Image 1 (tube, rainbow, N blue to C red):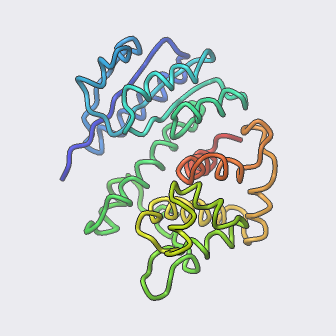
Image 2: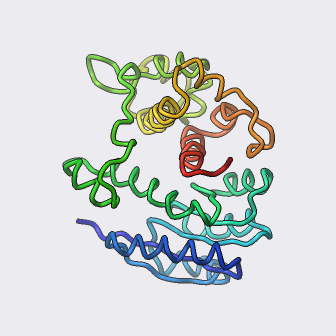
Length: 263
């Protein structure tokens, strides 16, 4: 079983955000993670990146320049999931933090649950031969709704793979727009809508759709939510995060909504 590592970056921040990050670190240690505490200054010049490996980075921030700190830590650990506890919950700050590389931006009172959700998804994606019960135990919960997040109509009935045409239709976007969000060319996706290269991004969209289906109901209501303006996205609708960013960024946003933030 691989040993996972988490880095805790704890600058001068509010007591609430520091406590939230420490509780999240304790939760990860309970799952067998090795943890290390560092200071933001150690990120400069790649010092942290040179000496530490991290699957997850827990970062507490105050109400100051959150995005600058997020960008600094993300540069030091580009392959880690960066989970941020912050008091700065105004729409502009949250949006900039996501743009700077955060996977989750949550207030202190929702941060531990946000971490639990992300770790569960990570464990589920990584489990190829692990029994689903073991995954639930690893996440510290008897059952989680993510276990049921499979959208049958998104899958090709012959191969079982996710089909881009089916997903683009339900999301109400063109195949070319979807290709951009998946990081593949339109021509390649048009030739093979179940291409292996597109599957990771399509899985993110399946997760997001199933989560929204549980939260708001019918496909029509999901599309209404996708196209409604959100104050935490500077007044843009969530679908713009997908079209102007990536499937991964959009799924991370949905994860943060499930965790209770943004509101």
